[in-house]
Amino acid sequence: MLEARHLRVLRAVATTGSFSAAARELGCTQPAVSQQMRALETAVGTPLLIRTGRVMRLTQAGEALVRHATGILAGLTAAEEEVAAIAGLRAGRVRLVSFPSGSSTLVPTALAALRAAHPGTRVSLEEAEPPKSVEMLREGECDVALAFRYESAAGAEEWEDLVVRPLLTDRLVALVPERHRLARTGSPASVAIGDLAAEPWIAGCPRCRGQLVEVCASAGFTPRIDFATDDYPAVVGLVGAGLGVAVLPQLAVESVRPRGVRMVALEPAVRREIVALTLPDLAQVPAVAATLDQLARAAAGPGQSAP
Image (cartoon, rainbow, N blue to C red; front, side):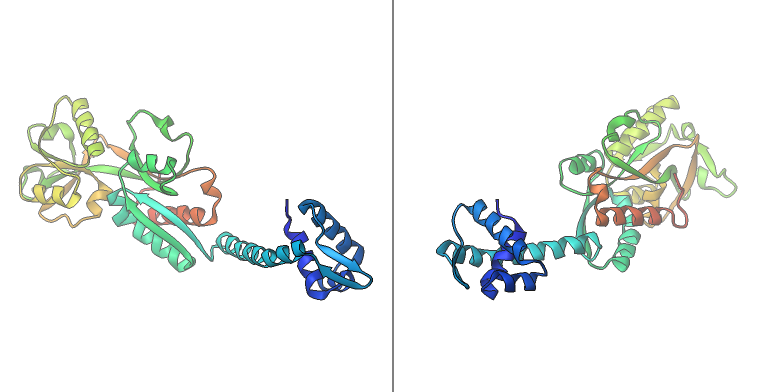
């Protein structure tokens, strides 16, 4: 097997024409150069130099190896510099996957801060809801996944193989039309979900929809879902038009302009945990670690609830 140190010695000998001159160039002793050359000739299985008195010539094999050594050593130098740049956050790439309300609230602040601190680090963004985003992480399709899970949901072990960075706790809120009975002046700041049992419902994303059905079932009723959409602005628009009520995470409401609606807290509280996920090995990569840090700082900003 060829070693870079042997190739450097061969190139120095070929350039200077002698072991002693090569030793001076490399900052070592002549016996050390001679030993390295013997090791290289043993490795390739053929002579590389012809020694006639004080004259040193390359064999045909030696000439071929010197030609290749130049490119090999240049490539190694480039690789060392690139790795050093990534390790020092002067370069690097992070593939981030986020659910939509996270993309419009936490992600912009985090990525702007990351770019300001480390302009050489590039981040790409793709949207996916969990559990799809978590599958993408495990399959190597992304480096960081922004995900969530509801406090009452079973299966906490689903993330046991991942590095979990808690970001914030997001509370579900009820949305009612601004002319709704619960939106009147003097109405309570919170409402029991059972008080909305007779209302038509607008449901959100599939996972949020499932959580809504579970919460309503715990209150003793099945919601009449007239409309279902993954688009949060559409949910808000339908509620604002008086077509029903909805329950959305507060983070989702903050990602849109809630016109024509009133936000009312639910009692008892229903919460979801927002986290950033990555693989254990990826957590050691400087650019990934910096992205996790910036997501945590964005989540700790004004108006957010720490987990």
